[in-house]
Each structure stands twice: as C-alpha cells, then as structure tokens.
Image (tube, rainbow, N blue to C red):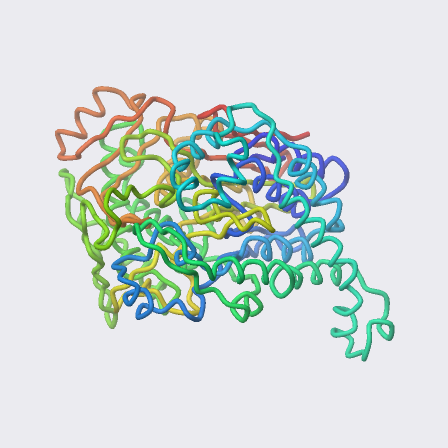
Amino acid sequence: MTASTHWLATAAAQAVLERGGNAFDAAVAGAFVLHIVEPHLNGPGGDMTGVFATAENPCRPIVLVGQGPAPSAATTEHYLAEGLELVPGSGALAAAIPGAVDAWLLLLRDHGTWELGPVLAFAIDYARNGHPVLAGVCATISSVADLFAEHWPSSADRWMPQGRAPVPGELIVNQAWARTLDRILAASEDGAGMVAASEQGATSASAATAPTREHRIDAARIAWSEGFVAREIIEFIREPHRHSSGTDHAGVIGADDLAGFRAGYEPATTVTFRGHTIAKTGAWGQGPALLQALMILDGFDDDHLDPSTALGAHTILETIKLVLADREAYYGDADVPLDRLLSADYAEERRALITERASHEVRPGTLPGHEPASPPLRTEYTPPNAMAGHVAAGVGEPTVARTGTTRGDTCHIDVVDRAGNMVSATPSGGWLQSSPTIPALGFCLGSRLQMTWLEPGSPSTLTPGRRPRTTLTPTLVLIDGEPVCALGSPGGDQQDQWQLLYLLRTIVGGYSPQQAIDAPAMHTNSFASSFWPRVWAPGESVVEDRLGADVIAELEARGHRIVVAGGWSLGRLSSVSRDPATGILSAAANPRGAQGYAAGR
C-alpha cells in the first residue's frame, strides 16, 4: 500500500511494489517524483525526515535523518553584520546543507533492493517529458512572478519561460534536473569501482573486486556532495541576491560543508499511549511535542479527547499550547532533557495548568538545570533595512494561512509492503520560491535555517554544524512490537497538531483511518511560528467550519480567538496500516485539494 500527497508519486511507488520492489525502493521512487510534481512544496535542494521499521526487526523504529546542519560560516555574527535581525525566510542565507537526496540514497542503499537507475526512471521521465502542472504550482509562481522577474532571473527562466506563469494542466518539464539525474546515474556507474577500491583498500579500481549495487549508490552520493552538483551550488550562491529581508546577500555554504554531510539514522523517540507505541524524531525536530501532548492527554478521560466536541477541542488546543511553549523553550540540536519532558510526573504538572478557560500566554515548564529560552514574541514584523516598497515574497513554509486559506503545504509519503516493511517520510524545503534556481541543476536551495534564532542562549540559536529545529515530523505506530501504522502530514507547525487529531480519533474514538483524515480539523497559532517572520497570534485557533456552530460558539465562550476556515481546508494527512494478526494492509489519503492518493493491492 502507498499513500502520498500526489497521485503520481503514489502511482510510481505502487508500480515499484507491483514489480517486486520493497517499501524502501517504492518510497524512494515516489519521493523523487514528488520533487517534480510538487516543486512548490519540496525539491532536491531541501530536506526530509523519515521513520521506518523493517520486517526483519519490526520492534525497532528508526529515524532517517535527512536534515542538514547549518554551514560552518553560518554564524550569528555574520548574519548580524549583514544587518539582519532574523534569519531570512528566502534566499541562500536561509539554506541549511541539503539533506534530502543523500538521505533517500542512503535508505535505498541499506534497505532497498533495486538498482538506482530503475528507481529514478519515473522522476527522469516526468522531468524530461513533462507532467500536467498543478493549480497550486501555478498560483505559487504567479505570487512570486515579480520577485523572479526583478531579482531572480534564473527562476524566471525556469518557471516562466514564456514570460508568464503556467496554467493548470499545462505540460511542464525540467530538462536541467533530468540532465542532472542522468549525470548522477552516469557517475554512479563510473565511480563505483573507485568506491569499491577505497572500501577494500585497493590501490586502483581495477585491483578491487567487482563493484556492488551499494558501491554504485555510494558513487552517486559522492557525485552529489563532492562532484559536479556541489560545484554548481557553490559557484551559484556566491552572487548576492534578494532575500525576504528586502536586502541582497550571498550564500555561505562551502565545499567542505557539502562534502562533510552524510545522512544517517537514529533510534526513534517513543512513548506509549493507550497500548500504542508512538515513534518520532528526537528534539532536533518537533516530533517529541506530539509525544508530550499524548502524555498529558493520557491523564484525561475519553470525554476530554474527542476533537469534535467543545470539551475535547478545548482540552486538545490547551495541551498543544503547552507543548509548543516547551518546544520553543527547550528543543533544538542540543542537550534536551527528553526523559523529563516525556515523564509521567512532568505530564501531570503540565496537565494541572489546563482550566476551563483558554490561555493567551506562553507557558513553558520548569526543568531543573535548564533555563527556558525566551525568543522574541512579535505579532507583526517589518525588516529594518528593507528597500522601499519591499514586499516579502516566497517566504516561510507554504502552508495554511492564518485565515485558513490553503497556500500549499509540504509533501508526505507512506509505504508498507507485503513483508511488513513500513516507512513514513516527510520531504520538504527547496521550494521553487525558496531561493533562485541554479540553472545548471534545475533546482534551488532550501530555507530551513529560518527556524533558528539570532538571539543567544536558545537550543535553536543559529550554530554552525547544528541542525535547525525542523518541523518535519512523520510518525510510526506500533502495537506489541509490530508496526501497525505510518502516517504524516504537510503543514509546518500544524503537522503534529493534525496528526494528534488522527491518533486520538483512531486510538480512542474508534475511527477508521479514512474517517479520521476526513473529520474536521483544527490547530492553534498561539506560539512563535517556526517560519519567517516568526510572529504569533495570542489565543488564536483555526477550525474548519464543519466542527459546527455550537462547538465554535462554546470555544469562543471559553476565551479562544477563533478563525473559521473552509470546511475542507486544514490538513493533508495520509497513512498506511497493517494488521499484524492477519497481514491485511490498508491505506488512506486526504481528499482536501483533490490531490492526495492512496493505492494498493
């Protein structure tokens, strides 16, 4: 079974499964298609996070780390000297070291079975021969058309070759990316012998034994991080260009940064909720916030856990505010006291703060030996040195606006195969509006560093070599050591909020996966956003109108500042499931936007 945010990615992944590939082969094939068909939501120059379990070792959930760190020259001193108060939301200064491609290749090497060429064939075909462009892509290009025309000419050439944005359904191609993938494949064959020789300590490629599939994939990784791709990236970002700050800057990624990064694996962080083990990233991502929320909510009776009632919605929203306050105060690629944050005692302390009234405050908890960070809380922001008339375009995560209007999301894919291998992954970053297109490569860099602060003293302060505290947060669910569900959603700060609703509805409410995805969604904005310009909306929550007038009225009476969104506007969840007792598989996808797709056989 496969479920993803775009039908063509689901179809490609399912085709791999139908031809004997496993879940990891399929996920990688689908992910490279997502780069092509959702370029406003993810790209090769971006990042990804995955969590998976193998059929051979199902009780051990593993996190795939495709989040690159800050470059060695990305110091707070440099950014402040450039006249910045915040890391920009677009432009090469916002770019972490790209991590997505290396992570997907690592997963394919270690857990897949297919050669790289057949896996990439789907993406190469869509890039070279075209695919019908989504309305969301067209709208995104239109929204940044002036930026492209005035400041990012390489992006204008790439996305508006006829001097206009494409129209929905128009066939579009990306010949530069197709050629890049061809060159990576050629390098995988040409360089495999040298990789084998290096591994075996041979003095030359001819002296080594025949290279393997793994050697060929590693040679492709080297072509990316040390070869022609790295050279083109470094050369291009040397030229200053417009950032969301309204000022021009050059990027700071160097050759050593690209050559020194390799994706990797980490044990998942887990808690148990109502007999289910929930597996997430560490606190370098926002994943543990979902785990904290479940720990708090586990102390309430079931009446408090129904998102469709005023009591349940209020309890859930207040819980989310508490855990996101902790996220901003304590999370980052640093020494985070997760044992304390995820403990029953701490959950009880936090639970006691939830009353009948909505809080409009930011209330992080107290952790012995750890001073909570206090990032700036702004309800609006104007860059100090922006050019006259500057309008910040192409900034932040293209997620749901505060009004509930959908501007896009990120991407997501879930796959389970007949053997029981299961993977959930959220690729993002490198959006077409992140930074100027690198012409020779056909993609741009990401903007994940906007999640770091320039103020000192926070675990999320911009620090060379540290990962930005990403919002990418896929989920794996296990029962008795067997993976039973992989799920996730695009949506930046809302990702874990929407996944929490799914888990409560399926585990406590008895909903089927599709019913849980279809049910009315909501989220709060009462915290500092992870995305430039890092503003917050005290006490504000966004709800789909299908939650009902009576429920909405009671939430307002409790003190929530409610923004009513369209009935089918929040969330883009997908999931796959497996019943370990029968082996029966299932999948579910989001109907919002008529784009997500689930398939299987």
